[in-house]
Image 1 (cartoon, rainbow over the protein chains, first blue to last red):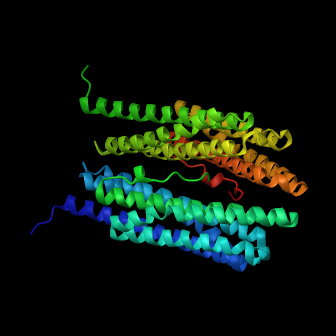
Image 2 (image 1 turned 90 degrees about the horizontal axis):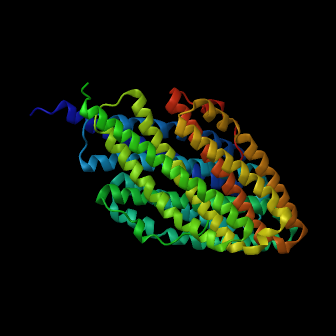
Image 3 (image 1 turned 135 degrees about the horizontal axis):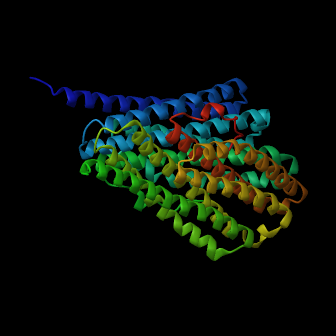
Length: 229
Length: 229
C-alpha cells in the first residue's frame, strides 16, 4: 500500500491545526478559571500569572492563522477540509478574545483586592463565572470530538448567561444605590460580569463553528436576540 | 500582449476582496457615527436603524471569509498576496466587532432615552466618540490606500482613547456618588464608554493589520499596555 505523500502531508497539516486550536483552548479555559479564582480569593499572584498568559494565547492565534492559510494554499481543498480550515481560524479568533477577557478580569481582581470578598456582591458573579466556564469546557469538548449535538446544546444554553447577568446587574445596582462607598468596586464587578457574559458568548460562537464544521449548516438563525454588552 | 487568465482571475478575486472589506468598513463606520448621534440626541428611529444594520455587517464578514479562503485555495500565493488574504480576514473580523459595539450603543440609547441629554455626563462621552470615529475613519483610509505611515499614526493614537475613557469613568462615578438616582443611566453610559474605547481598539487592530500587509512587519511590540476593558 502506497500513500499519496501530498495527501498525508496535508492530513498532518490539518492534525497540527487541530492540536494547535485544542492547546489554545486549554490555555484560554484555564485563564478564565484562574481569573475567577484570583477575583474571588483576592490572589494577586494568580491574577498576574493570568495576565502574563495572554501574550501566549495571542501568539498561538497568529500561528494558527498562518498555519491555516498555508495548509489551505497547498491544494484545492475538499469542502469538509475547507470547513476545518475556516473553523480553525474562527475558533482561534474567539479563543483570543476569551484570553483578553480573562486578562481583563484578572486586572480588575488586582484593582479590587479584598473588597471583592463582599459575599453578597460576589455570589451572583461566581454563578455567572460557573456558567461561562461550563460553556467553555463543553464547547471545547464539542470541538475536540467534532460533536454537533453537544455544540447545539452549548449554543442553546446562551439564555442562561443573559438571565444570570441580568440578576448580577440588578444586585450590583442595588449595592451601589444603598451605599455610595460601594460604587467604585461594584463598577469593577459590573465590568467583570459583562466580561463573563462575553466569554460565554464566545463559547457559543465556538459551538456554532463546530456545528458548521460537522454539519455544514449554521445555528445562527436559531439565535435568541442577546442583551447589549 | 497576452494576459495569463489564471493571473487576472486571481487579481480580480483580490480586488473583489478589497472592495468587500471597504464596503463593510463604510457601513461599520456609519453605524458608530449614527449610534453616537442616536445616543446624544435621543433619536430612537436612528438607533433602530443602527441595530438593523448589524445583520448586514455580519453577513458581509461571512462572505469575505469565504471569498478569502476560496481565493487562497486557487493557487500557491506570493507572500504579498498571502498577507492581503490574511489581512482581509482580520480586518473583516475587527469590523464585525465594531458593528456589534455600535449596535450595543444604539440599544443603550433606546434604554436611556432623554436622560442621556444630561450635558455634563454626555460631554466626555461625546469627546470619546469623536476620537473613536476619527480613528475608524483614518484606519479605513490607511487600508484603502495601503498607507503604512497613516496606519502607524492611528496605532500610536490609542493612548488618547485610554485618557478619554479614564476621564469619562471618573466623571460618571462622581455623578453616581452625588445622586443615587443617576446610577441606572450612568451605568448605561459607563458601558457605552467602554464600547467606544473598544471600537477605538479595533481601529488600532485594523491599523496594525494594514501595517503588516504593507510592510510585512508588526507594530505589536510597540504597543503600550492597555487598560482593562
